[in-house]
Amino acid sequence: MLFVRMDTIGYDGVFSHSVSAIESYSSGAKIVHGSEAAFILIRSTALAVFPIFFIFLPLGIFGFFRNKSFDKYVVLSFLVFLSLPIIYASIREISEPRYFLTLFPIFSLFSIYTVKEIARKFDKTKLISIIIGITVLSLSIVYLDYTKIDYQHELEAYQIGLEVHKRASIINTYHPELKYAYGKDDVFWNLGTFPVLHSETERKIKAVNTFNYSTCLKERAKALVEGVGEPSCVQYTYASLDEFIDISKNDARPSIKFNAVTHIVTDENSNRAEFLKDVFKNEEKYSYLTKIYDSSEHGYEYHLKIFQIDYEKFEHVKEFKRDRD
Image (cartoon, rainbow, N blue to C red):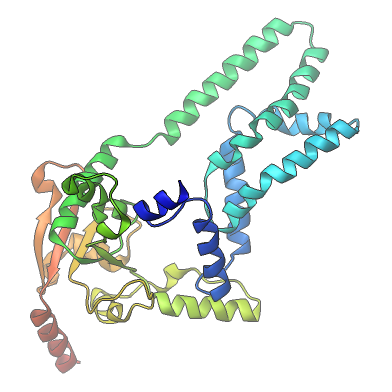
């Protein structure tokens, strides 16, 4: 089965992720961020235990280990062993509460001690059970409503991503909607065969970071040697669109080989780089950009624009600015 997955999608999904991670961290391409890993571990734990175990778990853990025994040490050893994948995911900065599912039986065991303690101190056991049930159910509904996925936005992002895939080739990153621009599903349907091999789905779209990737890696490596806080790559975001177009030609990642960015993709997301937000709001300032797609003109609520770069005009603008300065 592993060999079939390798031929079909290019990786086995079991050992490939671990091997790739080891290679990345050992080569220095990626660096372990202790503070970030700890934050992700705490955040994932909070998301996993809320709301079902959030009330009962703290007191339950104390009640469980109040009287020590061999059986409880066995449970503790299972808890430590089953937590290893969670720690591994946190080190890789993966925030995913589903890794905690294997711990739910142990969490339930801990929570029983809290319920038992509450029932022991109050005579109205049925009333307490009803209150607890209503509280957990209410918190669950609130939590699910708060964390639910905006499926309408995801559908529109997918459909617009296919337009990006058709019209562009080398673009700037615009996570998380960028994943739809690669058009993998569209490729699968068009081939009309199954299984589709990984070699038959080479990405047409290539994406370039909006921050200086090579500088960020160097500064992080320097910080690691000096034992100081590791800088965030966000602070190396390009100051202007002109700088992005110039410097992005020499992107440091070996997996991407290209000569120049061909298109600029920008939307109304407030987390985008400042120069992308400026392009979105003031497109008329950039004479070397030609708008070739605007999602608002096609009835979408998700507003995204695609601009094609005219390099002849871009060079003229650069020369004009040099002469003016």
